[in-house]
Image 1 (cartoon, helix red, strand yellow):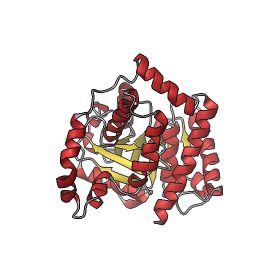
Image 2 (spheres, helix red, strand yellow):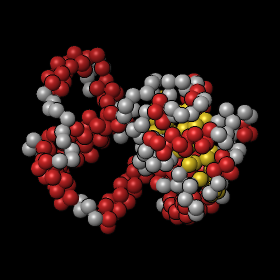
Image 3 (cartoon, helix red, strand yellow):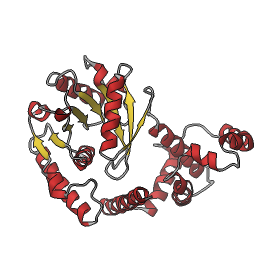
Image 4 (cartoon, one colour):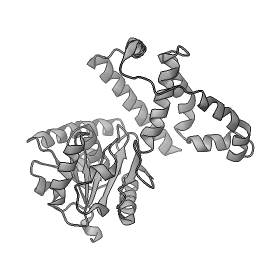
Length: 318
């Protein structure tokens, strides 16, 4: 495929993740076709994108070199799948997180595109070998798992199917880099990928500490936002350890490895997140801090996004 062909991307699904991907791709100058199987939904999604792009431009937080109206002009809506796929070199699926739905979508897509078109899924918890099990040519399949919201948090996990061609991983990595994301390569598929496995470990121990009466919901969140998170916004756990001992990582493990092992061995079982009095108490404590009605939640989400934009700008400038 010539480079002149590689300028159109199709986004399947026009929900939050689909709209976010569209905004990311047009920020890099790509033409984006949005498809939704609900008639008129893709067109409504573009109106929502218009509003977001204009707000970002007004706040001087618009990504890319193009103005908001120029980026918007690169997006088109489609109710017909074959039209949406025409001319695309890359397809990003963003439908419901249901295995049978995703499998069906990729079967439909494969019947309409050439052998060299990359098929990418946004799934956050379904392994590629399951998502693409009904695709005939699995060498061009890959998971590109974004972090919500993708426009503000740049990390993308690239997870290969066991049959994914190296060139597909390389092309996807290059694409994500070009549009300003921060792609990471997983060498093989694993349940939860990397991000959700690390996140699950943090969630589990945070939940246990609150459940066991060691700390409050408010303070465990402060532990992350004003403690670990301050460092991890700029350097990861490996470099943190590397910098926390005079002679680097090996020295750190000589000094603290035994203590880390002792603490890990003291961890309790996987908590019961959904039932029991302990879970109800944690939920109640969280809702006292941030009520779970739409007004309060949307206000906190907006605050989160504003802070993430400011952090992204700070990281970009440094």
